[in-house]
Image (cartoon, rainbow, N blue to C red; front, side, top):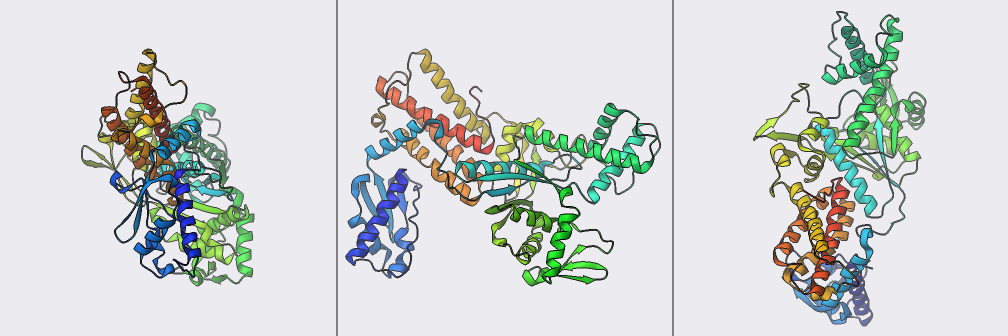
Length: 552
């Protein structure tokens, strides 16, 4: 049990004693005891606003509640407890408690940063899900970084998680891919054919076609057009999926499930529409079938089957989300682009109509990414003249910088990505600064090993009592809570900010606390603290999908 949990239990026990004594009276359920690490050390090691939260419940002032708790709390953990302001309680831990906690972390070794399993129903997270018709672009990169980081963080926090990529491999976009590759195929084999307006014009389509020709030559050239289209369409689809998966792998993203939209057509789509018909939520107008989504908060009703009998994207999405709910997940999380805000109401409406708990479906939105070079906005790929592919960004700034910069800000905020800063090897570049801290710790271990100093036996953590040492210790103590909060808020930017702050705190320690040239027991204790710091930096970067180099 962590010290934070012990404090919460001690506060709750003191409240229960006060209620038995009659000093506090209540008529409602009590909230959980929330503890925070104060922004300044002089405010204690932990603080709570519990007294302020419960003022209405106890019908008395927060300060009186805090005083009643303080009078009854078990003081085994505390050097002192102060009541501040209207009723904040600031807890100052006894030094031996701090050192016991540090020893527990040291003994946990590589397991530090993994919280106990919550035994929850599996959470499904679907992200990226780009059409397999072109290269992943920078916007997809932000979704890939955020989705994979949230998966990592939730797993570290003890949740059961399954990640999924929804392959949009049915519909008009696939027909357009087929037509585009067919025209490029004919052109590259010497025929004069115009590319229709509705075809894809990116350089990647030509690359796909060249790979098909390199593999199969002109063997499809003289086939009947419908047969050639069918073959080239499938070959192009498979090529696009290979390229897409290659980019994601290079970006350190993988998925537990790759779900093909094709498997929904026509049976699962028709089945979902039939259920909605039977429930009275589908009506016919102008030859099309409409979903009465205004009954559940949408701004207007939506077409699900067009006049020509073809399903809309919404029809497929209804069938897909029905399939997700039928698979029994405890929660569904989708990462969508910000331009899909209006889509939420209609999908949730359909789920309610089908009898599912739509509150289990959470949509996290991804705002736009703007790239800047030399202070100027960069809008187009140098090579293709289109939106900048993710692979070009990785080539220019590296996977580590790309991922960290994508994760520095909340996905709900627009992101200005400074390419020059991301490439710079200076303390101004946050990911370089963090990785350099990790590499510096590795360097310290190499130097101390050469000097014959290693961690043997049990480190005497109590020898560390300087401000720099205690600050670093307390910063490490914050890590499990940061993981818990980042998981609860689906907020990888919390981990990005935490690990930067940890690197900064380490830098102060490095400046003020020597290892070699001090008394051996103190040197060993500091080395043990650095071992914990090294692991924590590496673990946090790992959650973000960023590497931890040992040399830089």
